[in-house]
Length: 133
Image (cartoon, rainbow, N blue to C red; front, side, top):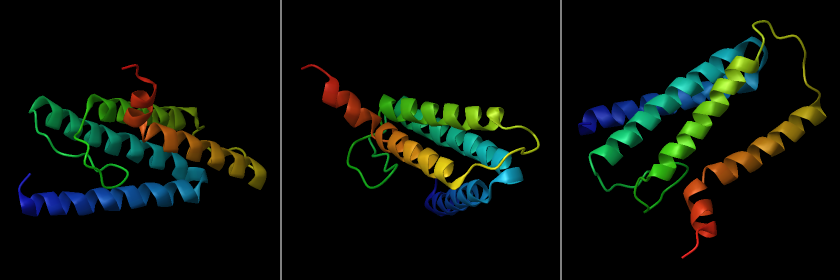
């Protein structure tokens, strides 16, 4: 992308990510649109990463923080996993929210999500850790 368009798209993606967080934290009726927005934003991220790989561009992903590692197939697999999570979240919710989780349930779900995202966002490093030389 040209520099001006790259900056604009970066701000739009940041705004989209902020909207996802706000929708998810709001709960209830806002969860389905939050999962749907996350799904589509992750599809766009995945397409951009795939484009970088196909064109053979050696650039870092900088997903989840600054990195010097170039975009790899692990980044695509990681995003496909997150796309799956967004789809399952969207698909598993009823159209009309029926129950409210307790604070303990929410805390437990939050800890599970934190553990999953921490490991899954570093998928390439985890695979390399277990790869035999």
